[in-house]
Amino acid sequence: MKLALPFHEVTQSDRSRVGGKGFALAAMQKSGMQIPEAICISTEAYHEYVTSTGLRDQMHMELYRKPFDEMRWEEIWDTALRIRNMFSKTPIPSGLQEKLRGPLARRFSERPVSVRSSAPGEDSSKTSFAGLHESFVNIRGLGSILENIKLVWASLWSDRALLYRQELGLDVEKSTMAVVVQEMVFGERSGVVFGMSPVHEKQSAVEAVYGLNQGLVDGTVEPDRWILNRDSGKILGQPAGPGIAVGKARVVLDSSDLFSFQKGEILVCDAVDPGMTFVVPLAAAIVERRGGMLIHGAIIAREYGIPCVTGVPDAVNQIKTGDFITVDGHLGIVIIGEATLTTS
Image (cartoon, rainbow, N blue to C red; front, side, top):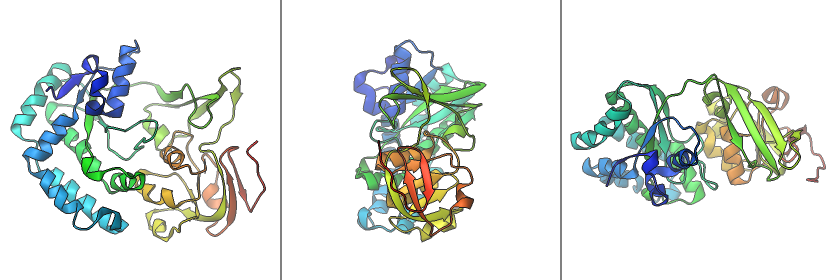
């Protein structure tokens, strides 16, 4: 069975082998869209790596020192760190390297590429794994590509990825990873288009930034945004995650504030980065100073059904920990104090 598949060879039956991102990109190419050249490193390559090196048995011992659902966050963090260290110290066996070098060398050689995570279920309608697995850009040379493939595999076992799987009830031991190695395109602008908005089915959504798309999803760049009525084409305004919540605010300015977070509080922060994901299921709502509807925090909030409003200027200064606030994710409104709001 081939471990490296170009997009034109990916079929419907390969979906679990090439992961969510790889399958979606292959489908886009087959529909006639212009997609930068790429190959998918299948999940079999990951399985061959962890099996032939003995990592699979070592990971099993780490994960089942005690029942996973009984582990505290600190224990999961320690377990994840030990597993990722195993990956960093364990080279890809020469036999597996040879199977991957040929397809990579024929297409990329010294051309700059991105090395992207593509776990089964990633970027699906139910589980996005937004920002939880690593991807790397501007990678050159076969040695560096192979090393970054291993880093993507290792990111399957970050503490935030483990917690996410635990919260969604996914079988941690069945976790696996495909990787997309894709030619870099140095665009002047980039963005994301939803033909149907993830927030409102009667709307379409476009968010775009200058340069690479990373600034859009991590919230470091405020995107230009267009929300369109799908019937009339009129431009509208848009929140990030529907729902209404009322409760006490917890302002999180750095990672040390996370450990004070109490279940049912409203998370107020600059932006939810992937390392903060473990508190999201505890939150009644999320308010972010930066970003749009495609920032990590907004995507994760929608998956958990948590109201979310992003792009709230000066939120972390105007709102204080302990303030009673109302978050309306339908209208994109945050009110200091309790308010009576409707969804109509």
